[in-house]
Image 1: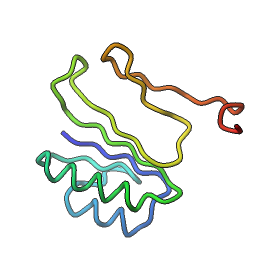
Image 2 (image 1 turned 30 degrees about the vertical axis):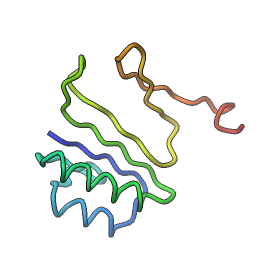
Image 3 (image 1 turned 90 degrees about the vertical axis):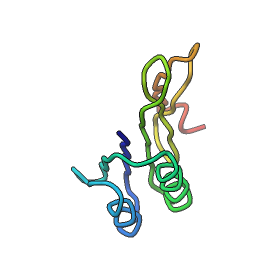
Image 4 (image 1 turned 90 degrees about the horizontal axis):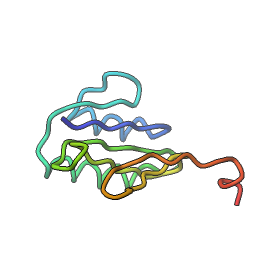
Length: 97
């Protein structure tokens, strides 16, 4: 399963994603696509995200069973700690610097 979460992206990009995935809620796209299609969609999202943000979650042979990719302006970042993915929240002080 592949999940894209897109915040503040253009309607054009959302339309392109909805050709391959189902938009189950505003900016939340879910589907089952090949790794090639997933990676091509991710490249398109990275090119067109502009001021918004996007997150991709998909099945992978890892300890947790999934991988996470992020791009754009977000207060969260993914950190790998001994192979385990964690989400780090930026404080207001960190984002101001």
